[in-house]
Amino acid sequence: MKITIIGAGNMARGIATRALAGGHTVTITAKDPGKAVQLADELCEQADADGRVGAADDEAAVDQTDIVVLAVPFEAARQLAASYGPRLGGKVLIDISNPVDATLDALVVAPGTSAAEQVAEAGGPQVRVVKAFNTTFANTLVDGQVNGTPLDVFIAGDDQSAREEVADLVASGGLNPVDVGALGHARQLEGFQLLHMALQFRAGGHGWASMIKIVTP
Image 1 (cartoon, helix red, strand yellow):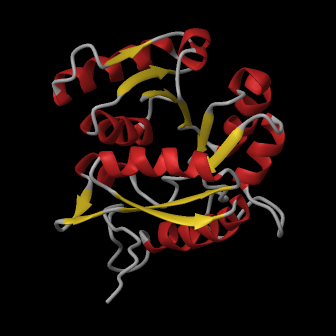
Image 2 (cartoon, one colour):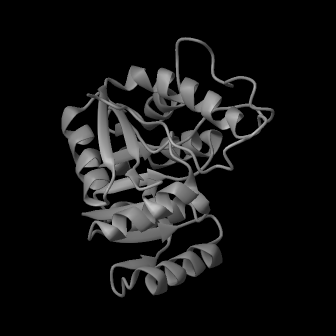
Image 3 (cartoon, one colour):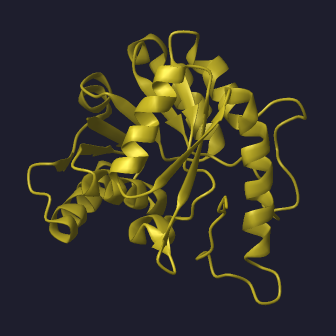
């Protein structure tokens, strides 16, 4: 698949690393084109992915892709979804954001909604929005595991085929997809990631190296 990642920060690096490990083609685009080029160059060297990763302006990157990943904060994700709108018709749009306040005490979205649902509303009915990767930290994504155990990636979306495409992306990168159903479940995903993030600062914090895992018999 062709994956476009909007953003050039740590989460963009982590998700791109997994996508490249799965054999996909990755394009990085960002508000600062220089940062997009730098990340693409570093990924190419680290992942030995010559020809499968590069940088492009947002027009080319969004139009010529299968999946768009918004690796940006919540407000930026909502604005980008509104800006691209119909151009994303038929594509899968992954929202990874966590709408948390600066002190990690609360969510900044009202009860009864989620960042993902607001991104979907901003993009319009033609955009197939999926919530994914919001419960994983960037450094664990680069490694793909914690203490030898693959990460779980929780996936929520109203379009089943879109969820399946994201699940394929996740699995191909060596991670474990967990389909939780409708996009409304992004409310719970964002809520327990708020707690997960806050735990990083408690006594004996986890140093952004922990994961949330479903363990079955």
